[in-house]
Length: 196
Image (cartoon, rainbow, N blue to C red; front, side, top):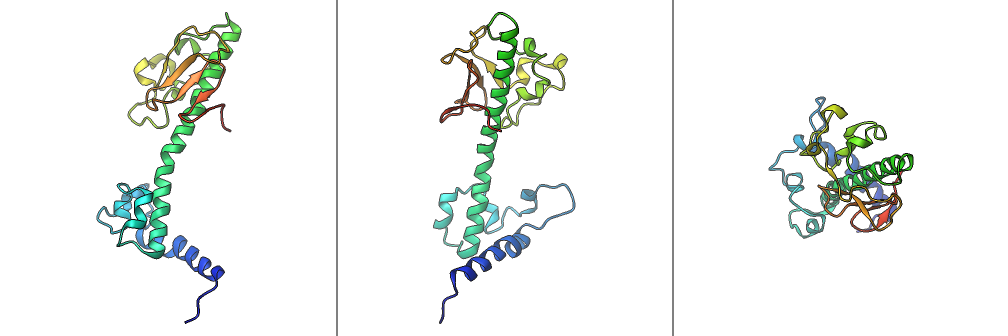
């Protein structure tokens, strides 16, 4: 028996993944129902994706060949959402700290002590809800804003602008996210600025 060339094998695999398997297991509907809702919970492959980590996929005896690759890709995509929400959270925090620094430059070189005093610098209170925090509802305007409608907390009120060691802001949802008075954010791994 002659083996197929790697290029042909890759082409067949990509065609199978992108077309046939996805169409068979996740049938698109014309409604606004999320794709996850169209997958039956007892499905032999896709039903266990939420409970399965990507490293466990290859150890499952019932998953072989192209199906394993599709399942592995689905697990990787499922774990990418928290990373994307974390990155967005850091971008929100950078924006909040930059607004606080702009207010400090206009006044006495100290960062504000509350979010309401930044209402002229922050266009909307919606930025005060972390993208990963699905339990909070953003306040539609500053008149209805309360501290409970914010995913962020000011750790050190009246911190001097530019203090690279002073933590100004933290995320209540991502415990390891910190915003510093110099405009950088610690994302749990390293300090960085806003990612565009």
